[in-house]
Amino acid sequence: MSDIIQLLPDSIANQIAAGEVVQRPASAVKELLENAIDAGANKIQLIIKDAGKALIQVIDNGCGMSVTDARMCFERHATSKVRKAEDLFAIRTMGFRGEAMASIAAIAQVEMRSRRHEDELGTRIEIEGSEVILQEPVATPEGTSICIKNLFYNTPARRNFLKSNPAEMRHIIDEFQRVAMANPSVSFTLHHDGAEIYRLPASVLKQRIVHLFGNNYNERLIPVEEETSIINLKGFIGKPQFAKKTRGEQFFFVNNRYIKDPYLNHAVNRAYEELLAEENFPLYVLFIDIDPAKIDVNVHPTKTEIKYLDEKSIYAILHSAVKRSLGRFNISPTIDFDQETGFSSMITPMQPEEIVPPSISFNPDFNPFAGDKPVSTRDAAYASFTKNYGGGGGMSASTKNWGSLYEIAEHQPAAQSSLDLPATQNDDVFAPVQKQLMQLHNRYIISQIKSGLMLIDQQAAHERILYERFSLHLEDRKGASQQSLFPQTVTLSPNDYELARSLLEDIKSLGFEVREFGKNTLVIEGIPVDLGSSNINETQLFEHLIEGFKNSQQELKLDKRDALARSMARNSAIKNGTVLSQTEMNTLIEQLFACKTPNFSISGKPVIQTIGLTELDKKFDK
Image (cartoon, rainbow, N blue to C red; front, side, top):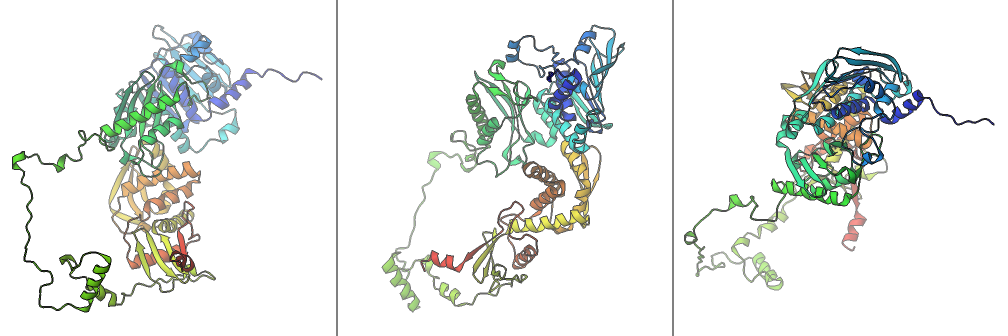
């Protein structure tokens, strides 16, 4: 039998390696931007066409490359950042494996122009599928320009797995934001299909965060800074009231490298305990500077995971630093009353001699039983009760009208609105006997039924009603709109704006009247009729709609329309604590039992609970 094991050609080996390094256009963007940072550039331009499928171009003013280096950079395991094995434990650069350029050249058409500062001419190289097509000297500015065209052109299966343009563009923006945030001293620009998405001047970290996410983030940030023998920590955390339902604005950087670490994320979340509502996530941008010998970054193809030599100590330092910053800026309560400012407005400084002790006055001749009115039978009964069971022998002034309790008991209860619900076979849950409704703690609706009583969660019920209604609108594309008297503008982050653009047709199907208006801005001219005529903040509603959509897709992996309907229902439903009239409760219950699935909320939890008479009798030992 002949030998069957053989070495793969370099072109095939590079394509296999590309499957790990370059998963989508955003992966190529990340590698090129990090290479530009390692080259010492202080000005970087990113140009994207067709969400990176047609063109990805990165232009920097870094150190550039010689003729030999320009050719060698496309070879596998060719790098300027590692010379010996020990260098792997002293890595300060973003790249070090020497695989990115070879992997990209294997699956795309690449053109590179590069010139060093001391050279008069640069080098131009064209490569397709790992094969060099052209190499020649060329006049070019200092630095490097790399164009990646037709990504995955020779691996159509990988290209078919790419998402829609807006989805891929959001991934590119995510990678751009991470690199730009880690390097605030570098100027960045981002263009997509001829439109400028970002223009970020060189600045400090706080200004870079504001430029990336919007001017309203300036008031949301709390500085964090801690220096220890193990790590140096700096950055910003967000105030609890600005927490969101998604984790999108959480960034950890270790030695300026973006990482994902659930263990450290838990340390930050613990510091926010009892400050955040359930399922809310705080903003944080935290930089950890640590000795490279104490970490290992070579554990994941995308280099977003790190192993630490002493992760428990890092956890403790991170948790205490965040907790202290929250307390220092009076976000969480402090035990040190000398620093507590909450009581300062309640105390008026006075000299001791000016303080007058309170005086007590009373009428020694006062007789509570004095009067012309004879003691009634009910008064005698009350005196007998207090004598036998405590409470004093006489009737105090504050209880002189206790007899009115009997008058209240003698009145017949007022008639309440009836609850007319559709009859269902063999199910008395939906058939209240006396059709009386009551609201409990402004959260639950109570109704009497034949077998006992029924409790309905009013918020979950309304969410179920709106979810099925919005799902129908998205299906038949006939959501009615209520025109706004004064149209509102909403400015989103570039990432959310791309998401909103991709959802625009479905959002209009819900009943919104929305149109694009300049850079990252939309104009809301109408809202769904289903939301009623109450005073609604259209801007907040739209922002919460986008945020809820991202949360539904992340947590439940739902399709686009289902996630949109859920987000709209959650943000539009009445909340716990809302007082409802009898008519509103009747309408809510009628619409709930007209739903396809009235018993369960959109999160799968019960909407209706029944308590039978037998169960109630057991409570009273009957």
